[in-house]
Length: 357
Image 1 (cartoon, rainbow, N blue to C red):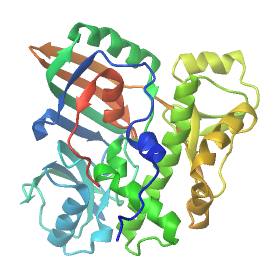
Image 2: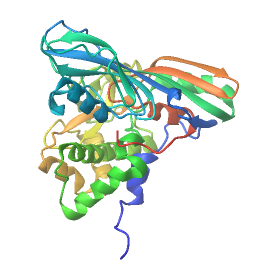
Image 3: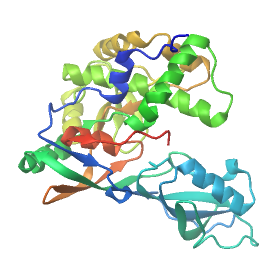
Image 4: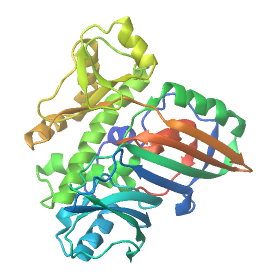
């Protein structure tokens, strides 16, 4: 028997190797030689409110994925894992400090100092609500790239350019699973019409499908040089918010705000409904999505809600230092943005296989 058919090569390029905005990079190096080479700190953007219904836990994990930690905390709390909340999933191959919430009663023992396989609870705070997905301001990264080769002196200039103009807000390879495994699952869904029954695996598959389509649209605009421009009919996102609005004919004021970083053009998180672009922006988006049919319609049919995602992400608080053949890079990104998307515009990195986390 032959091997099962896999996704088209065009899918893999869109997901795992989309076009770079600034051309070939002058430097290469090795990423995540050790877990401590990739450190991420989650920023909630709000303070615990002192309520007694839940406890917010700051957890440091190394070599453990987010769902594993959530299940372990649920066992410790004596509650179903669905009642444990977290704002976002973090890479397994990293030192990640992130927040979880667990239901609490007055009799619940403190979690501070509780440890498990690859994680420990650093602090605990009283809070009134469960922590929901996406309920964070962003993440702070400290990344070490070793074994630099090429023109390391060009890093400062290129980094300043990325910080000033922003980068394409691609979904990173983590979203598509180890060696693109989630792409194969999406392709099998098209072939068989069946989605996984398990909630977590179904969510991974649908998320990978939407991310693939977004990367396809953004990649087409990067290739055309329009990812950081406002086209007629554009759906525009206000920076730092979920607010979007359509602009049939973007005026000079909107173009100026784009240059100032106040707003961004958007691409689709495909599903039913939502605000859709018109004019030239709509035509470009439709042409890019045509190569993935009928996937956009299927996402709407299974209950996904149409949303928009900014095409541009702007790293902030950027700093770097060179020590011999190693680069240490620090920056902050808003929620939903991928550090690996920043790195690939700066240098070529050898990255270990992506996790499903």
